[in-house]
Length: 178
Ligand code: IDP
Ligand code: MG
Image (cartoon, rainbow, N blue to C red; front, side, top):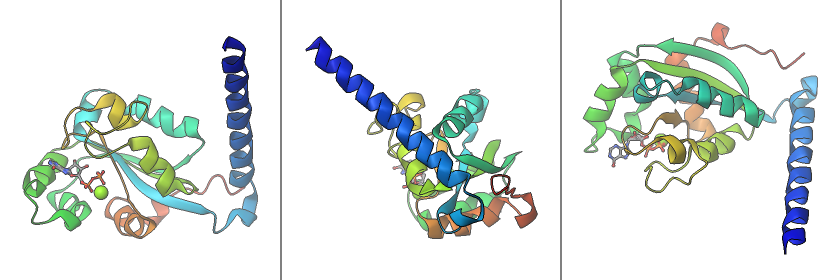
């Protein structure tokens, strides 16, 4: 039994090494990666900035092999907060959510990589921390559904709408393309 567990553990390590290697290959392929790379908007919410969780969260993103193409610590305006949560307008929690986000500070970033929308959504975990699995950001750091630590776009289409709310094109760096 112990031997089986050891073999399984080694197998998982080999698999993890392989996927890291193949991801690096994709990321460093130069011009050929065009079409494979997606961008998503992520921001660390005020409660997490205030709790000093920024470094730990950034570290998880870097460790996963994703690229941070832009980053900004900011005090969002009311309009920026409304625009980010436009789809929730009219819901019972909308007003309090917008007010909370606009209270700032937030750390906004653009994260880049193959299938980044899905990778980051999996890393942040379910919206309600009660349902978020341990090992996810919300599953490890949050208790409250509104103050659930982090935002990430839920589709490429929404990422395309959300990125310009916080970033101008010349603030986005393309440093992995060389
Ligand atoms: P998501 O952040 O996982 O994409 P959404 O359903 O898009 O979740 O909701 C946006 C944000 O609104 C959540 O991250 C959370 O802060 C807040 N929220 C969602 N549902 C509730 C709720 O039932 N009560 C209070 N806040 C909520
Ligand atoms: Mg959402």
